[in-house]
Amino acid sequence: MLIEQYISSRRDQLLQRLFSLLAIPSISSQSEHKPDMLRCAERWAELLREAGADTVDVMPTKGNPVVFASKNVNPNAPTVLIYGHYDVMPVEPLAEWTLPPFQPQIKDGHIRARGADDDKGQSFMHYAAFCYLVENNLLKHNIKFLLEGEEEISSPSLEEFMTANKELLAADIILVSDTSMLNADNPSITTGLRGLAYLQVDVHAAARDLHSGIFGGAVANPVNILCSLISRIQDTETGRILIPHFYDDVDELSADEKALIAQIPFDETEYLNGIGARKLHGEAGFTTVERTGVRPTFDVCGIWGGYTGEGAKTVLPAEAHAKISTRLVPHQNHEKIAQLIEDYLNSIAPDCVEVKCTSLHGAESYVCPIQLPAYKAAEKAYTTVFGKRPLPVRRGGSIGVVPMFERVTGVKSILMGFGLESDAIHSPNENFPLDMWEKGIRTIVEFHSEFDKI
Image 1 (cartoon, rainbow, N blue to C red):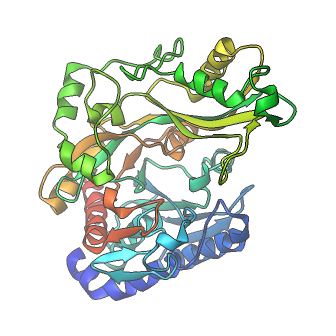
Image 2: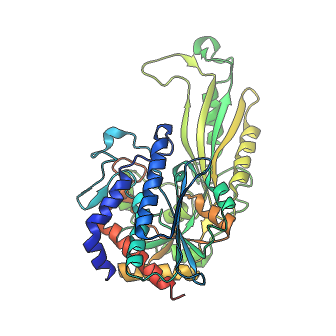
Image 3: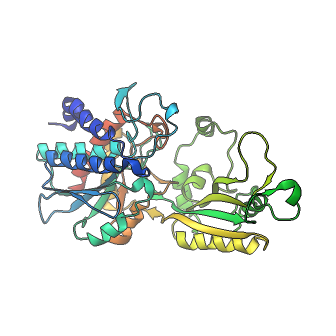
């Protein structure tokens, strides 16, 4: 049976199985959903057993459990490890959802629910492809599944699990569908991810909030000083980050790399309209696609201090706070960058305040060589299904588990994502176009066929 016929004949069954996962509120960042994490892991295990996996285990970690499954076809054949995550983001603000986030349904040709794309819907494409290959005796290589429940909180338990189970996770290539394409008409394969250094900055000036009339002008205002410190991190005109040695490990783009990036379609008007922005702004000397994919950035993600309620309160705040992130490119180490930021802020801060920096999250960047045989197999698979060769694109986001896999196991990952910007991942009304979901299943089946030819 051809994959198109299989999807057509099994569509309702496959969607019902996917919906059984989407209906579980497996929100890893909220402790009240701890029982839902185990329930979702066990449901995944049940589905993989039904699909014909030889071994299926729900394995404990220091945090949420990992689902591991394997199908061994030939001990001499290569092994593909499929990674996904079953945890999802919180749904707030709930009032902005047009449909209940954990009551999945098809509406206007889209799968609608929290996790429809990120990452239950995309992970399920691999499950559906696996079902097809097993049922039709088309599987020629070994397959392993690793599904974790902490990706949305930076996978704090996974590296220890991976290190303790390196032999169990041994593979020749890793497939990850947790990324997006340029758009529905222009298929692309993510070939690079930026790293991340995320910190909280706390500025303390006094033991308590003070009356601004009595003490204003006598002691430091930490909000004023924090704003001043932040303003000295980046040149607002050129976009250049002013922290000493920040760019030491950043490689300049070659002419060939610039030419490859220039092939990526970009419509400025459509881009601005899509996000409701007035004008482009970023590092001088680089295109928007370069800025968002291959250049480091600095951003204030939140800032607070003092009185922000209704009406007036004449208070001199005792402290001020900010959360800042830097997206990093290959060769930039997140721990080194975090230390550079802390050292710089302390060097420019006046001695009337205390500045404390706390690293909240870090991830390394990742690059997949486009000459890798498994990448070529993915490229052919996309070309077959979408009718055009996919563009290799470096994306601006960070997926810490991908460089973690390479660091621990030494194995490269192919990022076969099918999400679209309109899927609203992490936002209200998350969705996944049904036709894109089905194309994803077909493309994954084609990948396994092309992989056998390597």
